[in-house]
Amino acid sequence: MGILKFYQGMAGQTGIVTGASSGLGVTFAEVLAERAVVNLTRALAVEWAKHGIYVKALAPSFFPSEMTEEVLKDRAIHDHIVSRTPPRTRWHPDDLKAALAFLTSPGFNYVTGQTLYLDGGWTAE
Image 1 (cartoon, rainbow, N blue to C red):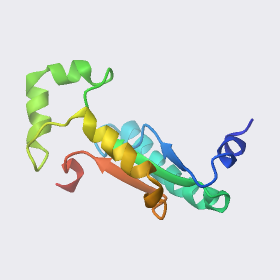
Image 2 (tube, rainbow, N blue to C red; image 1 turned 30 degrees about the horizontal axis):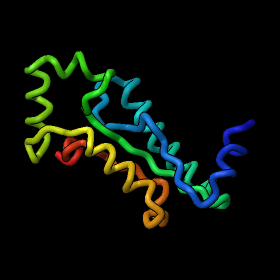
Image 3 (tube, rainbow, N blue to C red; image 1 turned 90 degrees about the vertical axis):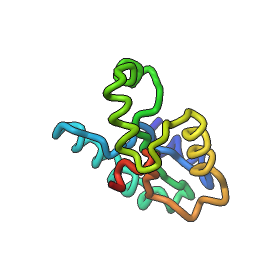
Image 4 (cartoon, helix red, strand yellow; image 1 turned 180 degrees about the vertical axis):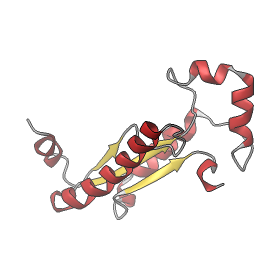
């Protein structure tokens, strides 16, 4: 079964592109991959709109996870990340849950092809 065939069963629903750009890439490959996900989100939103599928992406930064666990144990790195966010506060897993609820809520369907950066303002500076 092709991916579009699968998503056609989701008409009127939201598809979230996971692993989206955080805007924090430091190597050429990371930056390229991040921009590719953002542009994939836009392209799929246009292509799949006729099927009633809304495509949005979530771009979290350094949230506690298996992937970031070792990095965030380093106090210097942790403090640097917090210092780069304008609110100067820590992130919380509930922030991710709230963002997903927001992006997938039926009242948010007019927005499609957009990436929500959940980074405490890191990319705003």
